[in-house]
Image (tube, rainbow, N blue to C red; front, side, top):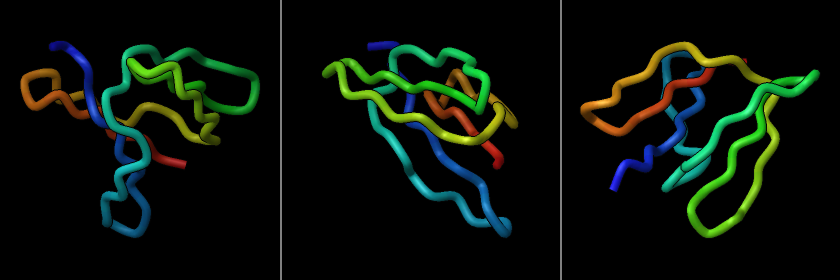
Amino acid sequence: MCEANAYLIENNDQHLIMEAVDTIEPTEDGLKLVNIFGEQKFVKASIHALSLVDHKVYLKP
């Protein structure tokens, strides 16, 4: 599987905000995350880093 988990970085801490993320789309206010189950989440953040080998997406507000 090629899904990733999305983490929000705040105050040097990582908080898991969504598992099994399949799609990340830019919006006017941030990012729209969609997982393999069709669940959606809108986050006022930008992509900070990707760790594709570890299947992790790091976001910052």
